[in-house]
Length: 263
Ligand SMILES: Nc1ncnc2c1ncn2[C@@H]1O[C@H](COP(=O)(O)OP(=O)(O)OP(=O)(O)O)[C@@H](O)[C@H]1O
Image 1 (tube, protein in one colour):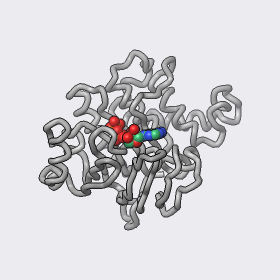
Image 2 (cartoon, rainbow, N blue to C red; image 1 turned 90 degrees about the horizontal axis):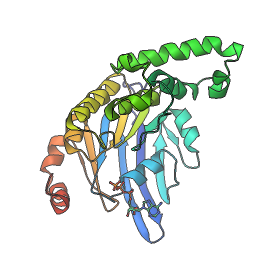
Image 3 (cartoon, rainbow, N blue to C red; image 1 turned 45 degrees about the vertical axis):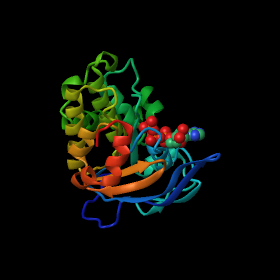
Image 4 (cartoon, protein in one colour; image 1 turned 120 degrees about the vertical axis):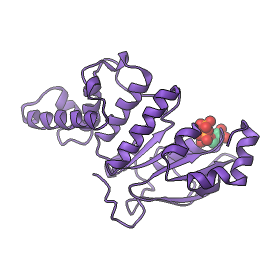
């Protein structure tokens, strides 16, 4: 499902979210909204709580308290696959592609999770799935074309450069037709050219009508693509603003100067 950008309700809303690990307050009263059709980034120093926040949003761990609403529905108690079916897809910091498959096959697997017949029936090529199989192949190829990586379709993913694998992983996530795509450090381990390519992919995805929420360390990427940025420090939200304003925010500068001298 592609999000409807004329819809005025936020696609994702976090309200007073807390997450505690024993005595550690990993997420402390965090709230923000993600508007449909936008790119929002969550940044913050190591240990700020970014990954924890993603895990809460995707349903990989329960909140201690607070509310997360996706497409108008509270996600508390829902399993990650149920949230995925509602239209939330994610990529992981460590790329999770099947080594023996081609790029096209990897995207088709992502598509199968949404198909009626399912992945296993597809693998065994049961007759009633042939038509669906053709449709899946067609849409998967279309996605590779949209991301301008159709030339990689028949290449085994293990033979691809790291940046190309990231692109295939994004195409695979899109194959589930999400309204919201969560990207976990999409530039991790990439060189500056590959990072620039990831920036292009993210804006292409947004232009396809898909809302993007990303966690990222690479400031140039974040400043380049984001409509809005949330800054976390020690589990709390210290700022939420547009990239130019975040770059001038005294609290944010202090946090980053304290860490590595860049803001
Ligand atoms: N499952 C867990 N059990 C206990 N503590 C945890 C768990 N997951 C995270 N933490 C702690 O919660 C805090 C936030 O961690 P988190 O990984 O969310 O930060 P982060 O901003 O993603 O960091 P990084 O940028 O290094 O990935 C850290 O102090 C971390 O040690």
